[in-house]
Length: 408
Image (cartoon, rainbow, N blue to C red; front, top):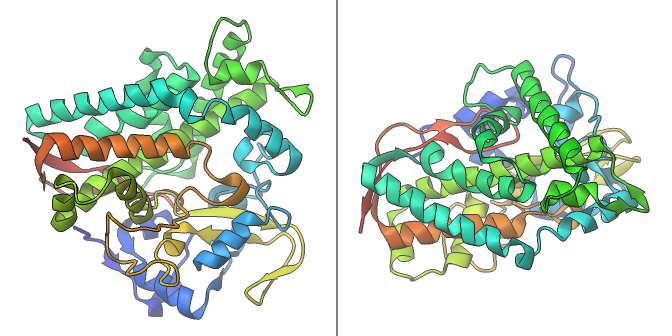
């Protein structure tokens, strides 16, 4: 049940697409549709001290920018927050904001920890956790699906991979929730900066501890690896752990919560899932498209160029909007309908090209475990109170979703 205010295309000239409250409290579907049709490479003008930026909305153009790291680099930052502030100090050291040979080498190291075979014990643990959390929620009768069920699943998996001690995980969840978005409309940039700094300090300490050896986790893997012949220093290990914890926790969690609400809002699709009329794998892909937890990704133009005939200058910030591309009528039949049997489903929720999400297999397994758990153990889902949004220009989803779950 979407209670957000619908923004009309006529309001476009008054909008700043970098404003978190706009995304949290508004339905921008009509704006995205208008931009795709009439202004697919739109200029969002300068506001205050923040520079203007390009807004790319069609699926074909979004994938073209993702694919072309020579003209559109990640090394100035990959989200509006850092791009509009002048860049990211982790560029060239954190996988997500590194391009070229360094990116290839670092990704090769990390991929070894994210293969289906390597993740098998993690996925088994995820399935057990989902069943336990859903069983507890059913016994209690009501729950906040966001905090009581979804919060523990992806965080537990990525913390297992990184070897984060059990006693530290609640605090890590609190910090990740504040670093990229907020549950509070009045949260400040300083709050997010403090949370990020605390996460970095935490992983810097873990990196130093893992140098001593005796561990079999991703931090130890990074500590013992070389990229292009050189070992990673503590800062590089810390930054990549930070990237993995944020990427591995927030987006999958928000997709799970959004999927639960989608099943409440679309009882026909809930019945199709319950009856086995749609498979879990296709349902996962449609939920990823439908929820699109990462609204955009950002790049910096490296040279004077153009996108769909619009002149883009070297140094311009270029944002590609997954939220729009995933509803592009040129790619998806009836994109405004939730169809759990949709196939093919060429969504860009995991990005595209060289920066395709490292943890895509794990995220799919986590969301699939939740959908299978709901299908097999829950008879009815009912919304029992207002959902609360995350306030972010990067993340989309809910920080709270009160539900009543009735068991079979």
